[in-house]
Length: 378
Image (tube, rainbow, N blue to C red; front, side):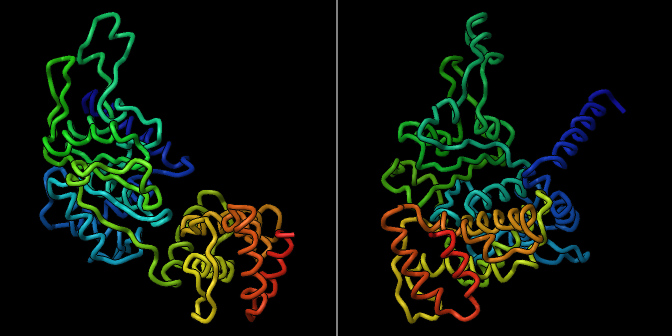
């Protein structure tokens, strides 16, 4: 074995140890077994530098049972066609824009797509109002720059630049939060597949396998709208909210179970009744009508997304584990529900009190939930 091979194995071993201790391992580490199983049985054509075929990538996201009996857990619960279109887009020269309201798993899907396609979900630019152009293009090591002037050694490549050079998948989160002039840095990258470096009279050209996944929030329209030139470079896929309460309960219970294992919290099955309640409350207030369609409701200012439901239930499990008997009860989730619903103390509190008195109070089997919510609302 050569020295370089030994160093490579040592780096991989260290990465695996870090992944085991990580609070939230990257997708490629958390689901390494499933990705390896898919690669072993995947005999379909793969685009250049893809770890899996498009069929296997879709199976990884949607779940299924492989020919060798390996069970692939669903990472996304939703229409299959949406996932197929997203995966197919990455196999073309168009970039992918995942659009949707908060909590529709845009970031989650983006991460798992990158993990399945490139085996690395970490080539990430997090969009904020302060994201500079260097985060998308490149920066400089100023000590090197001052000592020797512009050079390749002084250049600090961005995650996008590294993805271009290595033929991998880059990710840009919350694209519409980034200032418009910085967003447009992507136009040349996505249209010409090249990143000019005028200081060196050079460029970095994208090699085959490179593509980019961006996410954007429906609620952020008007913050930093994408220019028409940039939007044309993307194929937009809209991720909807879960179609049914059963789908949303499934998503919440799966994700809470994953988080609970990493945090040593009680198992989800003991608290399924409370998960159903949280999801029901969020869906009814979000849609402005009760599940039976008989009572119209006012909707609060918050999004009441699936992601927030996951947070409420996870917080409730922590309360049950550390200050209760380990079983998730109404009193454990009541404060979290109140915090999610009442974002505007004036208007939202009135809406919440009306919902409690007209819907929750009259619902069979919900007396404990009503009492717990009244207690924390007092």
